[in-house]
Length: 369
Image (cartoon, rainbow, N blue to C red; front, side, top):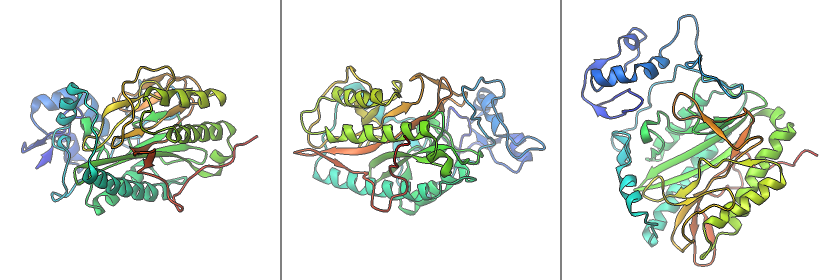
C-alpha cells in the first residue's frame, strides 16, 4: 500500500493517482485523490528536480533569517518493513492516542514492566544516536545521516518515531547552525564550522525513546568562541536540571535552574518548545518549560518518564518557521543548540535512561577564554 505524498496528509492509500512531473523524473508520488493533489501542489512541487542543478532552494521568496537555505529535492520517504510495530500515527499522521490523553491531562506513572520496556528502547535510542553522530563530518549531508538513522532503527526492529508524525517526512530531525529544532534532512553537506543537532526517537514494544545532542562539525566549530559558549552552556544547563530531579520537585522549578545558568553565560532560552512526558505516547504530560517563572503544573513522582531538552540561542530567544511548516530558526540568524535526555523519576532521585556511554561520540570540550 502506498502513502499519500501530500505534505498535510500522509495516509496510506490504494489510489493510483500519480504526479506526472515525478513520473518524468523516475519518481513515484501517489496521492489519495485530486483534492489532495491540488491542495498540496504548492508544497509538493518543491521536491521536483530542477533542470541543470542537483539541488536548489525550494523557497526562493522566503526571507531567511540566517545563511542556511533548504536544499531540495528531498529523497522519497523511506520504507518500514511490515513486520515492525508502528505507533498509531504511522498510517495517517494523526497521533489520536495523544489527542485523547490531552483531554484528560493525565500524567502516567509506569509500572515495573513498563519501566523495563522504557529502559530497553532508550538504550537502543542511545545506540542509534551514537552511530549517527559518528558520521558527522564536513561533506556529509543531513539526508545521508537520515539514511543511517533509518537503517539502524530498522535493524533493531524499531520504528523511527518522527516518521509521519503530523506528516513529518523523515526519520530524524537534523538542526544546523541557526535552526532551533525540527530541521528536515536534505541535500546540504555539513561544513567545517557548523554545529548540528541530531534528534533521535525510536518506538519499540509499545514505547518511545527520545534524545538529542548538538555536535561540532570540524575543527573550525571547536575554535569558535561563540559556538563553544553556546553549546557547552546548553549541555551544562541540561545536566544541572537533571541533578535536581527527585520526587516532589515541582516541574516549574526546572526552568528556573536552566535560566539561571543561561543568563550567567549570556545566552537566551527558546520559549516556543518544551520538554514533555514520554512513554507509550511520543509527547504527553507533563510539560517541562525551560525558562524561569513558568506555570508548569505538577510535581515529579516515582515512575514518571519525561524529557528535559533546553534549546538555547546565542542571540534572541524568538523563532521563525520556514515554509516547510517544520523547520524552526532563530529570528536573528544566530546559532542555536539543544540537548535532550529521557528521564525516569526513581524513589530517591532520577535515572537517565538515554545516558551517554564511555565511547559515545561528541561530549564536552573546554571553553575558549
